[in-house]
Image 1 (cartoon, one colour):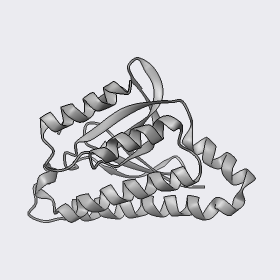
Image 2: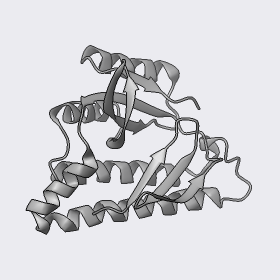
Image 3: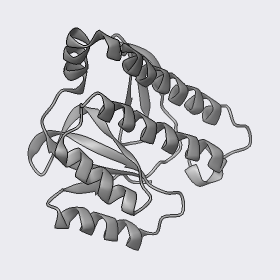
Amino acid sequence: MCPIDTSVIVNGGITVYEKNTVLTMYQHFPSIKILLVYSKVNKNIRKNKEIILAYWPGLKSIVDSINNLSWKSIDVFEQIKDIKGVNTSELDTIPESYYDELVELIHMNQGLLKMLNVPHGNVDIICAIAQEHFLYGKMTDSRGKLAGKDSEFMFHLLLLNVENEDISGIMEEFKKHSFSTMVTDS
């Protein structure tokens, strides 16, 4: 089972957990614009992984890969935190390679979740819409309220150079498919 979990706090912090114990908190992290999409999926990813492993223990390598991606993401966060002479309050002052690596890790994580058959049809639709706009997202393992309903969300790291009108266009595309969205402030 994946013992590592991260929580991205909308106001800019990141908390890393292992077996429900806080390992690390990043309080002053660069502003990263994130598009949250209400998935209309009411599933518990962690519970689904446990059920999958109980019936198909051979899939443990996929779950282990998801865990390894979590550790790699933490490594990237550590590297960003340790950059000298960079304004860590602005993501666009951080080398693009770190951003690109985070995007790739998100994309890989969602692909592995799909292999475990964790996503729902709505998640596939959300991913397809996002990819049309060169965005990659992943299902969160947390619940929140958007549109007055409890659900899990998809989050998408927005491109560094994305314009507000482009974000509005992407959000409008999701709205056409009846998905509510919100963007974290940068």
